[in-house]
Image (tube, one colour):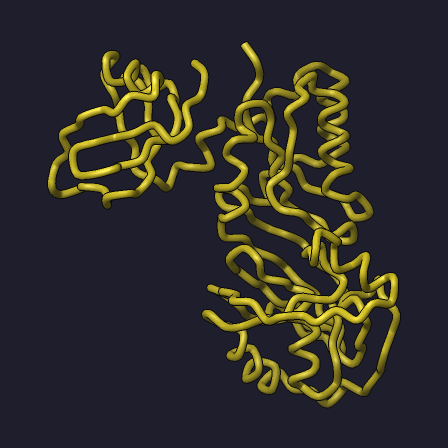
Amino acid sequence: MALSGILNIDKPAGWTSFDVVRFVRGRCGERRVGHAGTLDPAATGVLPVLLGQATRLTEYLVDATKAYEAQVELGVETDTYDMEGDVLARADASLVSREAIEAMLDRYRGVFLQTPPAYSALKRDGVPLYKRARRGEQVELEPRPARVDELYITSLDLPRAGLHVECAKGFYVRSLAHDLGAALGVGGTLAGLQRSRVGPFHVADAVSIDDLRAAFEAGDWQRYVHAPDEVLLHWNAAILRPEGATLLRNGQVLRIEMGEERHPAVDSLCRAYTTAGDFIGIARVSDSTTLKAEKVFAG
């Protein structure tokens, strides 16, 4: 049976996200390998790598809430919004107070508009913005909706401020560092970043590249592979009798009966299992009595 699952990898600094994918693909024997959410090369932390049929669940991990531990260098402004770029300005940040930072952080909690960095992987007319920026092109950046659920100071040793961020997809921690510094009047740039969580996957449980390499060499690397449905454990679950499981696997509509107390919303998604606990796939509650296959996984 083909392998299907997810590796929770602690990406090291200096590696691109695709470097990690290439490393895994070259050793696992499975050609369908992808990651869920790009990390900048200088960043570290959780990079979920999906194998086989689990790659069909990438969108649900990309959409999941993420957590970051950021180090912001106040008093420095760079063109890339991190320490990899050229310094544009310097200022004295020694008089910035914790109270001033706390007051400014209120601007970046909840839902608001955020302008992405010019040096980002966002595309304009099919070309990544960072390529346009490196060519010296002027790029008009449009603010985009962003959502931050948690944001607080974890350390303060000026000019360095540590921040914990929990956010929805599409949020740029580099923009936060730049915007916070600008709001404080001294400039700011991202000096360090660790992604500590993607959905259910935490950095404390992630496997390092060195440990994964050793496991590949020992032939026991599959002990690090998580079941595909771990991505979906916060969803409702439908347990189907054999005849229902067969109908769903064949893409047919399945009539169901659900109790009123825990009735899922119409048009919501749920995970589906056999009575033996085998994961069938994702189903959509198309109306109050009907389940329809959304994505079916081979048994």
